[in-house]
Amino acid sequence: MSASVKRPAHRPSRRGVIVETAFELFASRPVDSVTVADIAAAADMTSAAIYYHYPSREEILLEGLREFAAEYVAEIERIAAEVVAPSRSMGSLVEPFVKWLSDNRTSALVYFVQSRGASQQVEAIRRGNALELIPILGSAAKKARGKITAAEASVVAVAMIAEIETFASAFLSDDRSFTTLGRKRFIESGAALANRIAGTTAS
Image 1 (cartoon, helix red, strand yellow):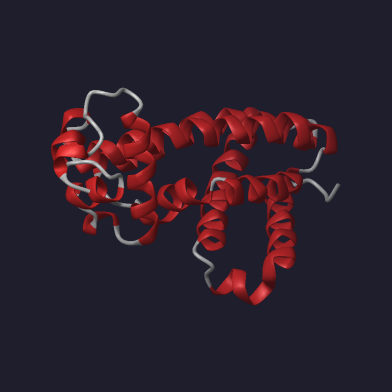
Image 2 (spheres, rainbow, N blue to C red):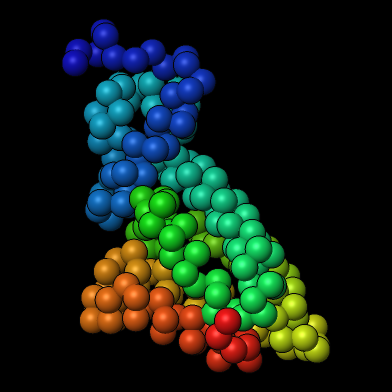
């Protein structure tokens, strides 16, 4: 398609298309190998149209990561309230979280695998996310275990965040632990580890 008939830059809805298209590229290859020209071509736009909305590829990445991060925190909060608390088992978080990862695979792959260490701003988003998750997971641990100090709950939460990130990365990148165990056993192993971390039992 020639530049004269590419989609105009002034449409606000283009921002969502740009981020979605960029994330499909980021998920398929190293983030730093994707150029604005690549994103423009994949989105059926001109580079000028991309720059109209975003000053750089980094800003596109950051906006998409912020959107995903907010959804990630909201999903963990939902699972904690609807699944973990009633079952009193921290391990019960794993299966619904895997389903959510599967449903949001492209963005999750960029967040948990492809963008790791990409920049200080990217890591700041990750750190901010962890700070939001600590009270959510700490509260879930308290409800699952019963009596537990605030300090213990925070330690459990930090350990759970580490497990979630490692687990998500292994699942999304189809690493050796996932391919060896298979989906069912991988989830069971993750649930068992979460219960050991939190001191809860299987539901």
